[in-house]
Image (cartoon, rainbow, N blue to C red):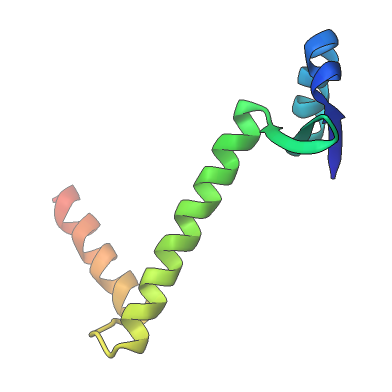
Length: 90
């Protein structure tokens, strides 16, 4: 866990920015010794958001499966995709 003070952020923004890019980790910013903000690079933020979206999709799929919704096997999904691509090429 990376922790920096708000003074460090204010006085040395460039090194904190570089640290965020290099580590791809959130940097916790404190103010008067208390947690205040979290700073991270745009790339790390976008990766984190994509992971959250993927986990939500996986959870929704698992909930569908557990609730008894109709599913198809991997083999059936491959067959259907192959059929679609074969039809599209024709």
